[in-house]
Length: 215
Image 1 (cartoon, rainbow, N blue to C red):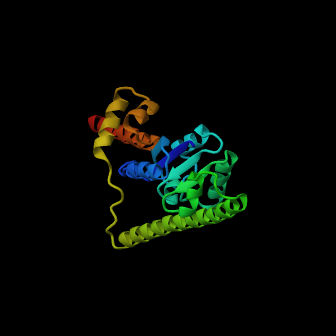
Image 2: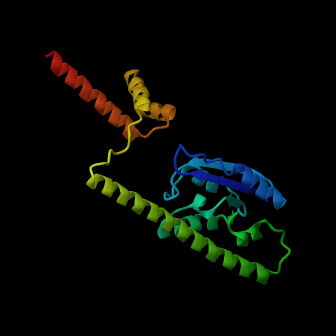
Image 3: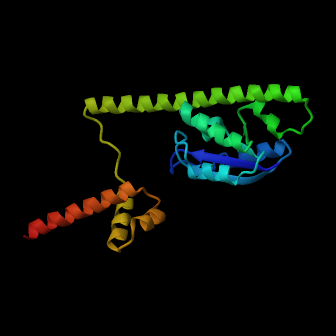
């Protein structure tokens, strides 16, 4: 049995590998070892994530995808969740989650009857859908609370917006000055092209302002 573990955290500040040892112990308790790990820091509300897509591409028919919780795999809307399930189904991949005992059937030897196996798989599929829906609702609830908090802070004149990462912006400005391309800077700093463009625009505006002063 080939088990591929998927670990995810939403931001780079969070430790995506936090549950790695727990998943190793979980697999050992069921008499298996994890053959590959896929670790990334991306929002679970996004379907196309580099490491998740790589896992699906690497997987062979019948492999197991092991996660700590279903929300680590996805916080997707219904349409994207259906798409992900179809992608997994095309390779006959089984999802096993520590939080979902009915999913453990994928780790067990074929010692049950075909009828009982079909019943458990149907129950597991229903539970997966339910947990995925709960994960999405939790995501939407947190987003709504965040937006309400921002709206309230703006109304009270207390909203300052997201603080700029001045150190990273200095590094990007230095790399731009050295003639590095956007792609090179992205690779070195792990930032977005939008941030690079913003720093470049700020740098141009500063230069123009200095030029006007001299004139």
